Image 1: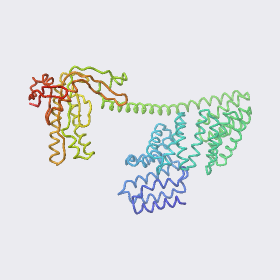
Image 2: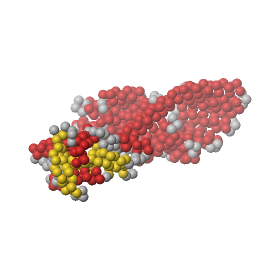
Image 3: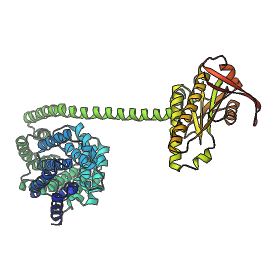
Image 4: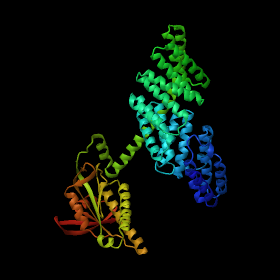
Length: 575
C-alpha cells in the first residue's frame, strides 16, 4: 500500500511541478513485479495525462510517457510493440543524455530482441544497460534483470564462463534489493550452470535453495522441480528423479503450463528407460510428444523422438525405433541450421568488436608512446622491447628559461601560473613540430629540444634557430597582450649550441627519451648567458650558418662562462 501511495504522491506533485517527472519511472517500476504489472496498468492513463500536460515545454515528459507504455507492453509479453515504441523514441530523441532512460530502454530492447532470436543485438543492448544503470541507483532492479538476461543468453549459446559471472552478479543485486523472483531465477540459473559444468551436487543445492523462496509463481517452481529431476538422472538416482518429476508434472498440469508439463514428461521417460521400464517410458513420452506437437517446440520434440527410438528399440520394435530416430535426425538438421546461423553471427560480431577494442587500445598506447618518445625510437621499443642508445655527431640543442620566474610567479595563483606555462609550452610544442625538431623535456620553467635526432637532418641547425626565433616572437607578443590587460607575463632567455651528443631511453616504468654530453651542458650555459628576447648561439652554431642569407648575426665577443671558461657567442635574428 505504501508503494501505491508513493506513486500517487509523485503523480500529484508532477501535475503541478515538472521537476517531479524524473521520479515517475523509478516509482512506477518499484511497485511492479516483472511479468505481473496488470494490477497497476491503469496508472498509465494518469501518467499519460501528466506527461501530456508538460510535453510542449519538457521533452522528458514525452520520453517518460513512451518508456512506461513500452514497459507495460513488455511485461504483457507484447515484445514487438515494446520494440516498436522504443525504436521510434530513440530515433526522435537522444536517450543517452539521461543514463537511467538510456539504460532502461536498452534493457527492454535487449529482452525484446532476444525474444525474436537476434542474439548479437540482445547482447549489445543488455550490456549497454548494465553499463548505464547504477546497480545501487533508482533503477537498480533493471540492472539486476539485465545481468540475469545476459546470463541466460550466454548459457543458451554455451558461453559457460560468462553465464556464471552474470548469474552471480544478478543474484548479488537481487539479494540486496530483496527481489524474490530474480533471486529465484538466478539460483535456478546457477543450478543449470553448475549442471553444465558437471558439478551436480552444487546444482541440486542451488535448485533446492530456490524452492525455499516464498511467493513464487507455480510455473517457476514446476520448472525447478523438473531441473532437480534432470540432475538426479545425471547422478543415476532414477527413483528420486521420478518423485520430483511427477510433482513437477502435476504442478504444471494444474496450472495448465503445458510446455513445462511436456518437459517433465520427457525426463520421466528418460528415467523409466534407465530403470529398464520401456512400457512406462512409452506412455509418458507419447503424451509429451502430443503436447510438443501442439506447441510446435522443435527442440523438445527432437529429445522426445530420440527417447521414443530408444524405448521401441528396447522392446525389439526396430521399425518404430528407426522411424523415430529418422525424425530425430530431421529435426536436428533443421535446428542446427538455424542455431548455427545465430551463433555464427553472434561470435563473428563479438570477434570483430574484440578486434576493434584491441586496435583502439593499441592506437591509444601508440599515441601515448609518441607523446613521450620519437616515432623511430617508439617503433624500436615496440618491436624489440628496448631501444639502443645512439651517438650523434651534430645536434643543435636548444634551452629556454623565463627571466625572474620566481618573482613573476609570486604575482599569480597556482592555477593561473600552471595555465600560463601550459599556454607557452603548448605554443613551443607546435613550433618544434613545425620545424621537425624533437622536444626532449620541460624542467620547471625551462624547455629543452634538439634538432638533428633521432634521424640526422642537414637542415636541423637552421630549423632549430628558426624555431628559437619563433619562440621568442611568441613570448614577446604574449607579454604585450598581457601588459595591455595589466596582467603579469614572462620574458625569456634562449641559447643554442651544436655538437655531438648521446641519446637514449632512461627508466623502466616511465620512459624518458633524453640526451647527454658536453654539448647539452654548453647549450644550457648559452641560455643562462643570453639576454631577454634574444637568441644566443655558440661559435659552433654560427660557423654552420654564417653564410646563410636568411639570418643576421651580431657578435658578442668572448664571454666568461661558469665551468667552461671563455666562449665566443652571437645573437642571431631574421634578416
